[in-house]
View 1 (cartoon, rainbow, N blue to C red):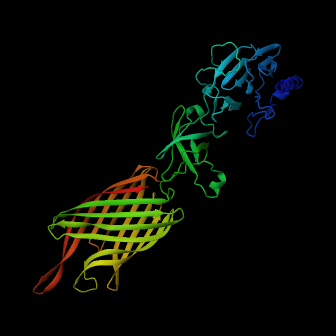
View 2 (view 1 turned 135 degrees about the horizontal axis):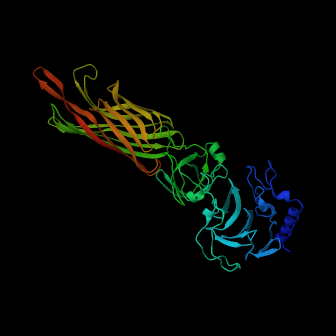
View 3 (view 1 turned 30 degrees about the vertical axis):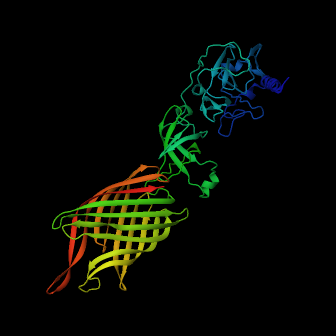
Length: 498
């Protein structure tokens, strides 16, 4: 007699001598119940025995499994295989051989066969409903785990019988199973802010569920120590076997990772999203149509290259402005540039640097002469708020000309989050380089999630002026004459993070 037969005999004798051992006493957990008050596996045998409230079926003799033979009282039933996992539920014996499940009515001895979509590891009960744990790491109610009929395993099987649904109706799955057993599944793909999971309605997922997205090998201790960012998204759409989860800008999700249901709140933030390290390239240009006393056109452009280290530091090269003006008056160019570095916290930035600026103005030192040329500048930068959230950023420079220190130029930007992938921008710049402008823009995340491979586009509209000073000489002397082009501007900025 093998081990299963010995255990079956012991089980039968125990049931006959103490029937109450198979049932939970009122107010007491059933034998084998887990810490949540649910029935659990009999770890000594690898099978699960599920107890139920006392009914008229209490008079049924307990089944005894001996290999592939099920003994119910005086009746012997050949299952055709030795079950890997089995349970007794609602007056039925259910034995799983791989993905094939034999369902035996204990009272009548009738046998039904079910074919599931994957081999069975175990049976368990949740909220009064029979669930199965499959080898694909998914758990589902029995009826929802059924797959298409197919060839049985190579083990001997009884004569084919038509597949029939269980007589007792199976209620729909609970709204979410995470309260008792967190569902853990694989990630199919990551597309911008959308993460596709390898689980859907059939696994109990519902719209509005929260899902924690874990990197391969990530542990809770690493999250607590701050070595890994916790990413929790919300299920926005659910299909039969897949679901779509949305995360926030700057949240990194590894496609090779895994996901599990959770009760934690989503980590996405529009006001203060995570700081993104790496390289950022930005180029913007705005065209100006000069109207009024002087008719002409102007172009004011700027370019920025910023590298943010993994630690709280950054390096930046800034060209601002770069452009020209042309029309009825004289033609002229614009140029300013600086290199600086600083401290870059997720919620603020402070930096300093040196640069060059083309200056063009009169009465630099209180005299009458015209001052024009290239001056050395000392540049400051400060940002209050997150780069991809709500922030105010200011660049300010001072020019050194012939031993004097004078104001050079200022650039200001206010960014206000509008949606998950859009921001409203108010920005402007001006100074003694010969231009001034202001504009309203809409920053849009055109591709990516804010990290590597992301593209931002900002169309903008506003107004501005470009000017220069020409020296005019008369019989009474020489003096500067200002020539300017002022009017509306239309521009666009593009930012790419390789």
